[in-house]
Image 1 (cartoon, rainbow, N blue to C red):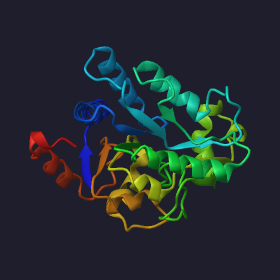
Image 2 (cartoon, rainbow, N blue to C red):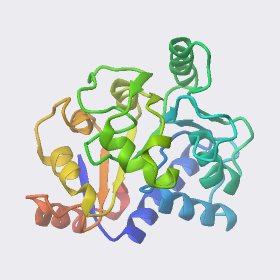
Image 3 (cartoon, rainbow, N blue to C red):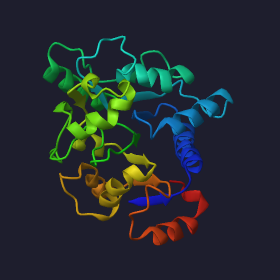
Image 4 (cartoon, rainbow, N blue to C red):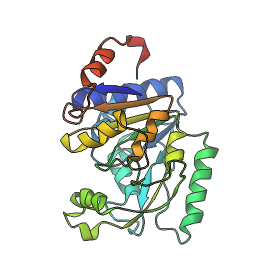
Length: 260
């Protein structure tokens, strides 16, 4: 696992560099998209580069990590609409090229199985963008999630609903209780995992992710078993890392040609 400690603006540029390099080598690449505040600066940078003609998503496809269950199709916080607003509508990705689990389906288990099959049929995800919850979840894989899990229905914890209440006018009662999420094994099937975390509120989760034991109590720790995982954090999110100085030294001495 590579740990990069840089200011948020630098983090966004580094992740955009990785996406730009991937698309240059493989224009039909499959991207994994995350919602939340952490990836927003990355989407802003990608939109700027696309507008400037530096990269194109015209032949790319994308898969969303998760979706709320029960929100109407036109709800502004439905993750399909969030991804359209924050990413798809700002770049040149083709209509229909962004896929997500169907949180409005009548048969949710069947929708989850169909989503897994669609990812597999696309050849899997090349680069998966991730954030991390304060309780260590990635996607909506809450503490206690099976490390072998696949896309499925999950019940959100009180902590996650409280954290996400800011997107619902501060009213935790408006945050759905259930979601569909890619499982930890689904996420681990991606060829490159890129996790972004900023702010002191993520420091404890980042500490466990990078330096703690692999445990279902901190689901993101499964990333320690991935052959190509990159964790990018700012100083505040890195404040609990015991080996912070070493991570900075390693990245400073890294050959430029390696990229992330």
